[in-house]
Image (cartoon, rainbow, N blue to C red; front, side):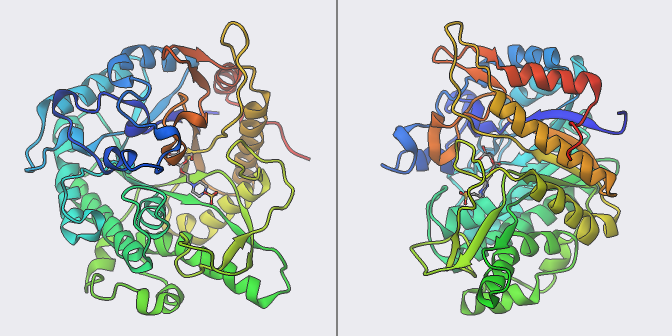
Length: 451
Ligand code: GBH
């Protein structure tokens, strides 16, 4: 298949390590990892997979798998200092990486923000100035790499860096306040719009996108109006708030109304929504699962700031090692919806920028993991992509999450999403899924047709 791009994805904080080297400053995740109880086992990102030192071997590994593209993120605190000056040594690292990828025939897909905000920025995403700093940072990276990197993603999953970070308190910086969550969401989206515009002005031929995460909700009882309404509100803040905004439609009126007094009316200034709706060249989609929900009783801080009573009802579907239910049909339906509602009308193609599974990997005596469960997950979800394409969705590529076992945020190193195992000595050992994925790429086959 010639019109389909195959790759794997990672994120800086999850793999790089070298957290104080070559002038890298602290990110909010370095700080959060120090909070007792914030991250499983007290894990942190100081070493991670040591990709900062092993990038060359990692690029060779990617080439061996036949990856056509590699999605990685730049660590903002590595390349811009607290006073705003570019850090040449940090930029050198990404230049080496990009040059190495290009030499190996692998297209670099660069994400500017995958959650590792410089800890020095006052107020973090609660401060409007951070959106402006983000656009300046985008230009610093573009100045160095714009002649070689054609694919630019502003943000990874702003829902997570607002709702999980400022609403539910489970991601850095660990706040739990609905207004803060919505304020952070607005400033993230404003940063996206400002950076997209700055990159476009600097480079008319750059391809610019954003990656959003989607966890479709379905009602536990489709005849219960209260459940249908809770699904509408979950979908409102999790999906429509972000997708409508980046496709130039402004914030959905029902979400603003549902937020009520929690809506950050002062933060949202005249003209902001137009900035956020800057034209896009692609939509990145991250998908892992769907959730059946009902209206329950609010129990502590919720990422669903306009639906705190949303309660997940297990359907009895098989789950991954995260406890997330496996639902490839939900993926096919989601892609149809995204194409029909947003991407298609805007003439914007979709790329799957993350999809994958955490599995309870059991290495054999040689350290090899025969992860048939991960293969089954990837196969079923690739088949869902094929199905959605057959139904007309313009999906042009798929990045497996993730290349290497890595730092899984609040779960530390306890959860393994890699198609390549990273052992205690940080050795890379391709799992059965890596071999399988390499075969899929070689044959260009998306997946077995499903009955
Ligand atoms: C992505 O986040 C991240 O981009 C990536 O860095 C991360 O390693 C990867 O996924 C795996 O987690 O949370 O139980 O309510 C995905 C975040 C996952 C958030 C699914 C919503 C719904 C189930 N999303 N989750 S739950």
